[in-house]
Length: 184
Image (cartoon, rainbow, N blue to C red; front, side, top):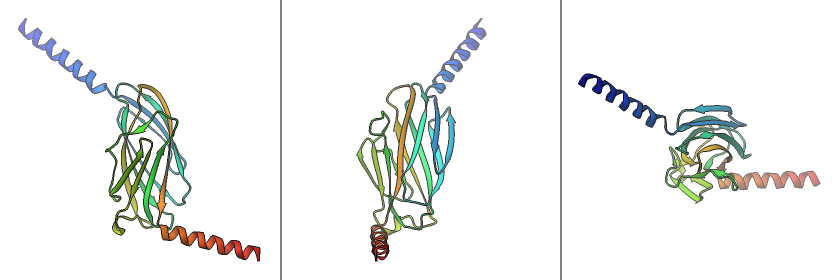
């Protein structure tokens, strides 16, 4: 009899542990023009890898379903193939959406300056020249994103590099010269 109670107690503990381990289910689908389509289930971290070769802002469309744990970690490694030095990188969530960045959770292997403008805009920046991302180099970023309510969700995150200011001035000057030559 005592042996049966021990077995039943062990089974009950295992069922309880498995039930707790299953909490936090998230099913996530992600589409981005420079990376393509990704699907992720049963976890709380989404890792993306890709390259960015222009300064057009890239939109990541995320949708899925979550239960009792509405926060997940997004980590992304981006290679700079733009030909221009990056002095920062910005992530912006839909202003009208429910998703928010969790303050104090962002990090980067390159950029030490991290500013939460609000719960929807996060800017990474180089505090010295050694932190800048040169052409051909990569940067890794990570941040926690909170979905306030369990259930279905859908939101967009816009992302883009911040070019070196001297490069922007040089590109602007080049555009003015080309415009002047065209009119002449």
